[in-house]
Image 1 (spheres, helix red, strand yellow):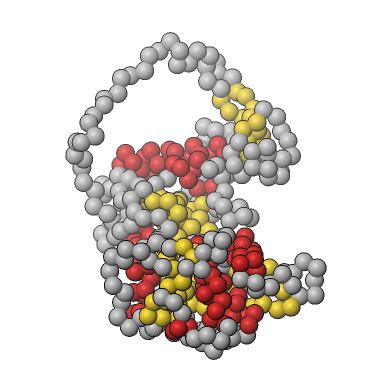
Image 2 (tube, rainbow, N blue to C red; image 1 turned 60 degrees about the vertical axis):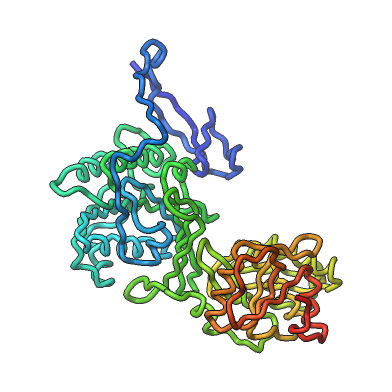
Length: 464
């Protein structure tokens, strides 16, 4: 008879230890270790019985079946997914509480169900009537979606495997509420989350069902549960945004069937989430062109060019350690740019408070924002406004050099489409295509040339 044994699992990272402690030695989180009871394998299992020989095939063989993608019709969502759902794929979406994950998935599942696809929505957090109330508020009550309020994985698997018509999409809201009755641990623990997801994914891949998991997040914004959960699924999406703004960003951080770092932009309205077809124009709609400290960044999120406003405020500080407040940008990268400006350009920022904001509630992580951040800081310190018809992009090194960034032609095309006439950018060698008509390129190789914008020299006279 197999014996049971006690293990102590960290609910943050999934590390296993032989005894309880207040702090996890793997992720250094406090009060995350809980006791779980596991069924030990019988002694000698796997040592006497030989395994079954599996069939090995050639890499050059053609697939036995072709699986066309299921397009939901919500273009921003399909864009992030790489063109729609792949049958048999597993997707994990995470985001802060109340950001709109359930609203987005309900809109997606209803849109796909209206295309004569069998879609099942299983909620472990809400009753069926509560889901119906949200559907009525969104105007989706007439969609042929099958609802259920359940948490037992065995019951869910048996339900989707039955029926005359195969299931195309299964939504699990959320994976932390699911459990398998063969395990003694409580729902939401590392063992339950890992085993429940594994059982559902196994069924989905064998039956060709696209499954979407909703995942809770920790206080740091990471998806709760074992890290192996993100490795098990095919696609990981993050739904993010500032609650003080109406914009929501759906970002793909992992995708086995499409590009990563792709984003979809939505606007939260009373009737649900609306797609934003041209986010660049929307982010710049309230920009004041004659204000110091404002620069337009030509960013690139995945394959999508995006123009956003970088706002900076530099004020004298009375504190021994001046403040550095950042929204939508990396705090450490701002400190590096400030150090480069002070060391390589002689611009004193050490005695000033610095406030930096990416307008619209979006977060920019790529190094190509360095030049726009530096220009905004210098503009805010000097009190001189940047040219209103200019965009900025480029990476700044520690020596003050401005380095090339990927796909400058796509950035320039987006800037030209929105009426910008000038681009301050790195020097490009071996240009493959001429720049768009109507936009002047100002190529700089050092951050000193960005500082010259405020020395009384005309930007059009800078070296190209």
